[in-house]
Image (tube, rainbow, N blue to C red):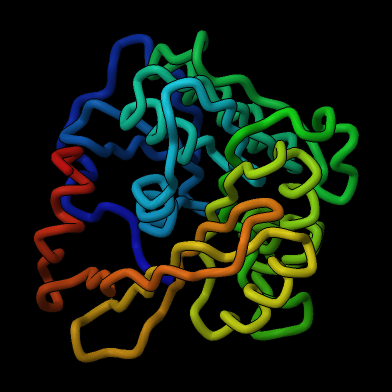
Length: 262
């Protein structure tokens, strides 16, 4: 999995009122404008979240929901990219909801980001059908029994389909979306067929697709895709996105994203 912003960690002093707890780190994006509390040993956001936030199509009046919000990083980024939009973040793990709430307060975004504890397998308890214009999600990439499962609960639930499979996230998104609403997702490239198949089963027609490569000459590691609920067929395949220029330097496009200059 791609890593988070390595270039900014530790460069910015902690705010005096910063609600950091033992075992947490304070990381930053957008040249320190956005501060994010994370567990040092548990789940930590990766560059995937930033790429998804930039990829999603949002309009000024859109009602937006993030399924599996974790530390709240995607809503935090989206509020910076789209100053008029309010966002709901939904997370299964209570401890993550609590930390996401502290991140919202730390960045003074209480009026624009609301958080709910919820389970994508019970979408009706998250909100009414058709109540959102846009869904974004960064679901667990790996099946329950595939690969090494972390003993850390936060990492395990974030990486493996322990409390919700890919189809559950997409079905919840389709339920919450209005007709012609949009769902944007980032996923591992190796499961692209699974993703496209599940999207069509959920009546989310794939419309925009971009492959993500760590280096220009490497195989794709991630896929970014946006679908429209009950949309017509027809897929736009965008130019690939390359993350690194070399082993120590981000590409110009990704560096600009991290700095908030896109």
